[in-house]
Image (tube, rainbow, N blue to C red; front, side, top):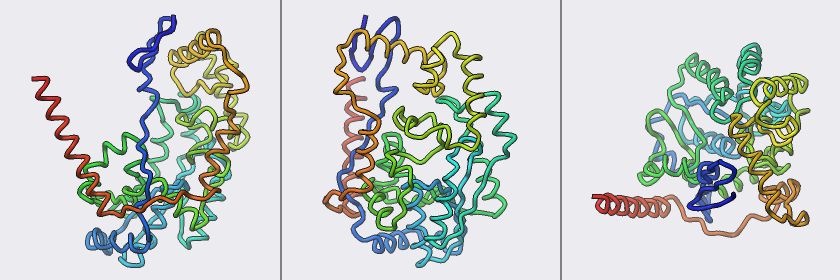
Length: 358
């Protein structure tokens, strides 16, 4: 039996909460920045006194958000003196081997030193052997990437950490950063957020103007991450291949060993590899396999209407190659005003809900 009610799908003894797997996206159909120099001047007036002659570290991935953050910080450095450390963490065996080439290109174009850090290869191999590839619920890769960065910051006595988080990046960031945006707070608890009020359109525009667009975006991917990031979509995992890591044979061995150890009774090996089910724990991988099989058996699917990975990739490529939309620039003052109104409405709604419950 297949039924859907209240955002829950029930089939074959499974109960799938759709909201658990699909996150709401905060749509911001406008620009915040009309003039980048004016934005940086405003930022300098807000945080300049606190960061003057201090040291700041930026974890740089090469993606659109960290690239925009780096550009803003370098322009801010022209107005306010501070020491800037920029670090890229390379994860052996899982990162795309061409990423460092792009990091070198950014370093040369912007005239900034980008330190390449990396966890010990022996540690990465140990995690791969014991845990398999990073999967949802256990992204051990994040810990291994953060640790060298923390050690570097401690060694150099870094006082502030700059992050490229954006308010409208996703629902979780929206909820976490909404209050700070309403106050116009860019610096809080030793964390500098130089670009957190910018929209997706802002960061795309800035990266394009500086001709710093990561090659993965031009291939149609939506994020810059490890080749085997468990939070990539299936079409993205099919766009990058195992040949783009430094030791494809090792990864193939790890995948086979993981399937035999944990997934043998849950899913066929062909599905485990073809659908990249290593992203999930075995019982979830089995659930999605059963759902896929059930839908195929019950629904009359028109093969001509199935969207291909190439069509999806082309849609995302246009963001970086086509003409950007002509939409208004709201400015920081108007944005914070709008956010304050959102906060007030949210507080009123929350109070009404509490009153009703009482």
